Length: 202
Image: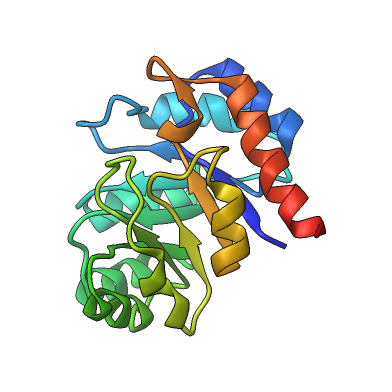
């Protein structure tokens, strides 16, 4: 089964749509430079609306470990996704502060990037084309990877089926690919989830 992560949610109507679609994960972006940024207070409100069967992932870019751990340990988020320059030392430090699982994101351009991802100390890894570029990377690079991963970067309803067929990732992660004019679109969200689940059935 391919798990689904709908990332960058920041409005109550988007949480309502997610509750109907039942993805395994949704994402809150805590990077202040992002147009999808949410404050911890807003994330707490949204998390209280979220179906208890859906896990909330907090997305961070070079945030202080203590701040990440605080959001995890308070239950505002269930997992932390590290999308900056966090290294092994950072992850080890964060693991002393919280028992909650971590996702480390990697920008995939070469086979060396895949090797770096495989060596991550985080519980999960995420393969992306860049920092929210909305573009895919060369999926052939991921075909040799030996550990489970979240696939991100340029996914949308029209190509996620091929991604699932080609790579069989642990999870697919989408943000801009389910948006219209910068906001999550319920029709696109539903189409994305339906496409993934249809592939899983074949």
